[in-house]
Image (cartoon, rainbow, N blue to C red):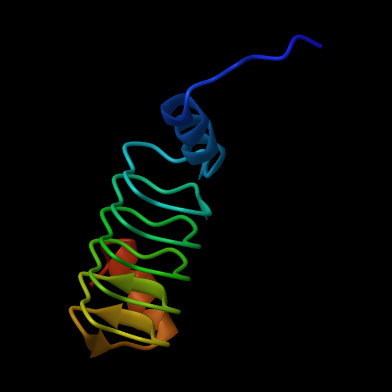
Length: 102
């Protein structure tokens, strides 16, 4: 196998690329998967339009949230589930809203 003498900048770019696991239009994210248009997030999965979030799952349009799942348009939340605009919903209400039934 051929060995390359890469610049520090190129090595950094390769390391950053390893963290983009099927992410699209994300920037400065680490260890995220299946995310879209997120910025400065870490350990998130299936999130979109999130900023400065960590350990979140299936969240959208959230800011500064951590350990959240199934949240939308929330900010500064921690350990929350089924939240819309920082208001708690039941699982059934949230899923109905998500399907545009409410």
